Length: 201
Image (cartoon, rainbow, N blue to C red; front, side, top):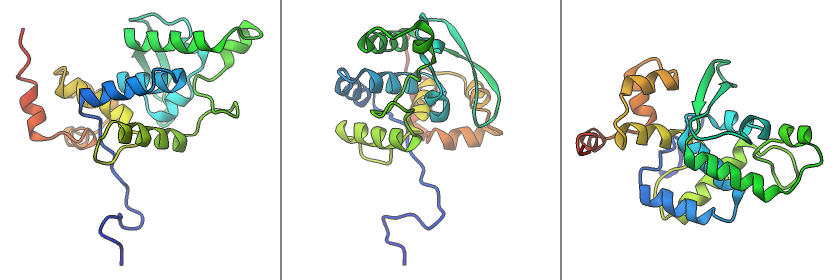
């Protein structure tokens, strides 16, 4: 018999977005002296990139990027080409990581390096990102289930619930088939629809 706090065998565990802006601030504060992790978290919650596409990023892709610049990314899962914009906080985090590395042996060597390397020098695994996100959320006193996919979900959640982005745009960006799929993916709740009407001009 399966314990009450464990999913059935074969069941998928659904992770949540980070809804609290205060918790996001706590995590950023935690990562202030961890440039790689700060970039991972910052790009993760500010773009709709999947973890597999985040981990494929190289310094040559984003090392010189400026706020508002667009990067064309071929999604690993779908082979779809999408354009991703980088805002100021992403660019500042990337610049901090670049500055922490010191001079590379050659420019070509630097550009070919992956952004998110492990201590062994290879690319981080998605499972490692999952553990990192869980630990950051625990530090921020968040209750619930969080993991690597929480980063992308956080971007989508706040685009809708905080910034009022039209749901149809998010459906297109996420490449979802239906409105219901996006609502379920972002774990949207009734109060999230109320919040979009509370912003004042």
